[in-house]
Amino acid sequence: MEDEDSQYTRFYRLWSLQEAYMKAMGIGLGFLMIRAEFIRRDSARWKLILDGQCAIDWHFQCTQFDSMHLVSVAYGPYSAMWMPETSSLFLDGDSYPVLLTTGIEECEGGAEWQQ
Image 1: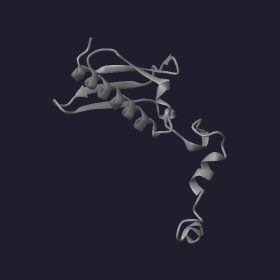
Image 2: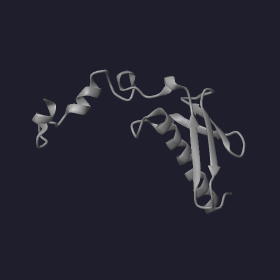
Image 3: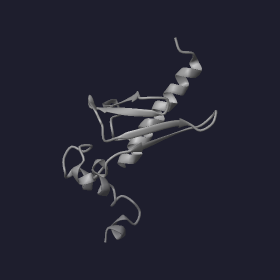
């Protein structure tokens, strides 16, 4: 059984890999991380299983920088970068503009900003 320090280290390593992946794609909290699983290839390299499929076009490295810090890097295809108009994060193509403009009138000076 892992000791508590090992569990924390593993948790932060996986968290760091998830953050690297989301930042590389240009997305935030709207992505369901339950879709992604990271499997260690060797001491520093990891592979991504996304929606049950190995994402062979993604590369990950996670390195312990010092005793208190680690760094993770994700590298994937440009085509994987998030684009709002084609995103499955929203229900339909019309949802994105609505999210951006909802409540503008209620904000002070909102009507002037829209013009």
